[in-house]
Every structure is written in structure tokens, then in C-alpha cells.
Amino acid sequence: MLERLRYVRQTFHDLVRAREIASVFLKYGYHDLAQLLHLPRLLGLPTRRLREQAAAMRSLTKPQRLRLALEELGPTFVKAGQLVSSRSGLVAPEYVAELSRLQDGVTPMAFDAVESVMNAELRQPWTEVFVEVDHAPLGSASIGQVHRARLLTGEEVVVKVQRPGIQDKVQTDLDILARFAGLLEHQVEEMRVWRPVALVEQLRRDLLRELDYRVEAGNMRRFAEQFRGRAGLLVPAAFAELSTSRLLVMDRIRGLKLGEFVAAEPSGPCRTAAAETIADLVMQQIFVHGFFHADPHPGNLMILPGPRICFLDFGMMGFLPREGREGFASLVGAIAERDEEAATRALLDLAEPGLGESRSGLSADMADFIHRNFNLAMKEFSFGRVTRELLSLTARYHLVIPPDFVSMLKAFGQMEEVVRTLDPQRDLMAQARPFLRNVRLRRLGPRRLVRTLSDSGEDFFTLLRTLPRDLRSFLGKLRSGEARVVLRHDGLEPLQRSLDQVTNRVAFAIVLAALIVGNALIIHSRMPPLWHGVPLVGLLGFLVTAVLGLWLLVSILRHGRL
Image 1 (tube, rainbow, N blue to C red):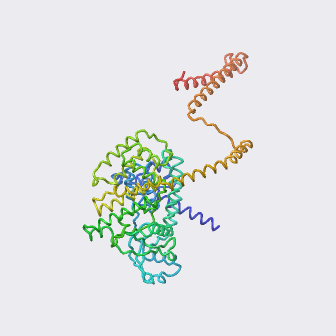
Image 2: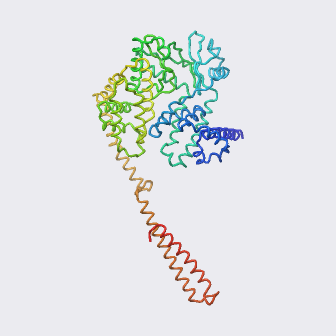
Image 3: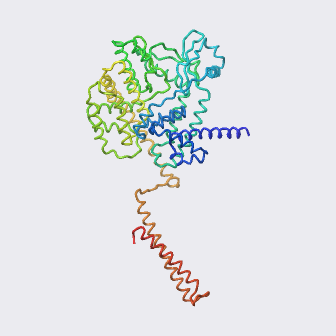
């Protein structure tokens, strides 16, 4: 009984949230989609009032309305918008540009709520661990917020506290989104190319990782390990014994944010050195390790004397496998050599297959892209603009670029913004060339070739060893009827429909002829009841036959095939 009550309560809670979600989208003008899914009727929404609110939004563009709706609905939908914008082949460039501006900042939570979470996660009063915790947060977002604190040992730390109830809210939103995605994929054929169900599943994986602060602590350890011994970098350490899925305690780093550093160093070698170090660190993350900070905007970077660079907020990380790094190096190398055919092949190799659109004209557009962006003076070159145009090109030809690859391009663009603020004359392409050259050389190195040949040989011998067994199993299933061969002919549907029409008309004509003969025999037999000496049943039969014959004639004339 208790389980049933809990289920009813959860269902009611989901229904209330579903009404809230649908109402927000209706308020921002998505009435057609809501009507298509029958949401106003199913959820009992006040459509007239919502239409009046939507009328006030007409001055905004559609991408702006979508961004505002997602921000109003909270963290799940903000992350969903960010994920959709990363699927560059499915979203128009103007939506990509607008969704990239999504922010999840909200009103800070009261310190009482912070205390309750800390006490629950530490399993003791927080005063048993900390001397003090600053009541004013350093920053606040929809998932959690950050406070300065001091341990009993005297160490200064930063405490990241998750909002109470955020996990349940996100889980409810994800369940509702999964239902909406199923409706869209089932009822709206145009939406199937977006693969909404798969997008929601990816969003679920990403959000659940971000909701677990132990994952972020692991990211920090991995990031520090891959840069062990690297001068010019400082990575805050997490206190594992004090950190949980909802509480993260880490070193407090005292440094300058980008704006503060620029104000303190109006010019000089320190700014140039900081710019070079930041660019080197980001390129090393991407091209050497493949594990990179996916959000290196100015707020997530601190500059210390030396200069040393400290990255903050390791919740959003990306990973490029070796094949992805090599593919990107091939793309950039082909672009640098002005070889549009090689660049087109490299871009197609990076894209995910499956949309089946025509690629004719891609090489010409790639040549135009190269000419417009890579024959400029260094001070006019912008990696951010190149990224936007490349994503626009992939969208035009329905190429789906993997999300981590798009994250890498955006991280590179954010890095460029920071570096150009510090050193406007820095040539990032020249700085990237040694990294790209090393990626391409490693692919052709003797050790790599030996490993590739060894792996290929092992796969080949494994295939030879298992082939007889697999073939015997397949033949056995064929004999027993467990397996069967199905031949399918695509493109024969019009012929099949024509044959069906011909067959149906011939059968109909035979039935009409039989009716005519039968009615004639009835009239000839003079079977009562009679009307003016003619059998009434025969007359009615001829009348029905005439109507059916006229129907067949009209059908043939309507299709233009007499």
C-alpha cells in the first residue's frame, strides 16, 4: 500500500512538473509543437492566457525564445540546450550561436540550506571540521554554489555545495524529457533526424556525472597526474576524505582573475608569458593527452606569479581519443596545405555516419572556406570565427560532428579569447604547428606501425581460429530453422502498388460480370415478386450492379488510366 501511495505521489509530482514545462514552452510561442503532441488537452493547459503571453515575445527571434525558455526551466534544460548545440549537423548556425550563450546562474541559496547539506554529507556538524565558512558565496549556479572556508588544521579551502533536492528535480526532468522525446520521435517524422531519445540518454549520462562531485574530484586528480612536473601550472587538490557526491572540498588558490591581471600588468613580458603558457597548456591537453578542460573561459582561469596558471571547475571535461586527435591533425594539415580534397576527406572521417545526405559541393565549399579564412594576416585571423564557419559548413551538409570534438573546438575558441586579451599579436597557428606535427609523426612512427601490425595480425589470427566454429554454428541454425535468410528488394513499392490496383480492378470486374449474369438469369426465370411482369429482385440487382460499375469507371478516370 505504501509503495502504491509513493507511486501516485511521484506520478502527481511528474504531472505538475510536466505542466510547468509545457506552459513555459507555450509562453515562448511553441504552440504548434504542443498541439501536435496534444499537450494542452492532455495536461489541461490555459492556452488562451499562454497565447497572450506568447504575443509579447514576438519581438524576439526564435533562437532567443528557445534560450530564454531553457534558462527559465533550470539546469536540466540548460544542459540539454548545450548538448543540442554541440550536435552541429542538426542545428542551424543561428541556434548554435544563441544556445552557446546559455547561463545557469540563479539566486544564491540561503546559508541554512548550505549548512544542512554540509552536516548531512559530513555526518557531523560542520563546525567539527571547519573553523569558519564564509556565508557569502564566491559563485552560485543552478546545481551548486561555492564558499570560502578554513579547516580546523588552518588550511584555507573552497567548499562546493550542491543544492538540496537538485538530484530529484533533475531526475524528474530527465524522465519527463524521455517521454517527450519518445512522443516526438514517434509522432513527428521531421524530428527523427535529431534522434531525441538518444540525445536525452546522452544528457542523462552527462548530467548524472556532473551531479556527482566525486567525478569532478577524479577529474582533478587525472588532470594533475597528466601534467605532473609541468612548470607553469597549478591544479587545486581535492580533500578526498571530506568530499562526497554532494560536497567537494579543495585547496583555495590565491591568484588573479584575467581582468585583475590585465589591470595589474598593462603591458610587458609577464602578459606575453602568461598568454604563451595558457595556449601551450590547452594545446597539450588536446593534442597530447586528449583529456581537456571543456570550459576554459576567463572565469575558470587564475594567474599566479611566475606566471603560473590555475584551472578551476573541472565539472565539464572532454576527451578526444587518439583517432580523433589524429583526424583533427589531418584536417588542420590539409587546410594549411590548401588541399580542399584532403580536407574534405578528413572532415568526413571525423563526422558520424548515418544521415545519408548528398556531399556533392562539399569540396567547393571547403575550398571557399580555406580561401576566406587562411589567407588573412595573423592579426585578422580568428579561431572562434573559423570554428563557427566550420560548424556552419557541417550543418549545411548534415554532418554530425561528435560532441567532444565540438567541445574541443569551443575550448580552443575560449582559449583564443583569453590569449588575445593578454597578447593580441600572438600567432596561435604557429604555436599549434609543433603539436600537430608531433601528432602526425606519432601516427607514422616505428613503434606505432609495429603496434598496428601486431594488433591487425592478432585480429586476423583470431578470425581464422573462430571462423570454422562460427560458420558451423550458423549452418546448424539454418538447418534447425533458428536462422533464416531474408531477401529484401528496395524501390519496388510503386510496382507493388500498381500490381495491387490492377489485381483489385480485375477481381472487381469479374464480380460485376457475375452479378450481371446472375441478375439476367433471375429476370429470365420470372421469379416473383413481379413488377409489371419483371422480377423485382432482378431489377434491384441490376441497379446495384450499375452503381458499382459507375464507381469503378469514375475511379479509373480519376487516376487518368482508362
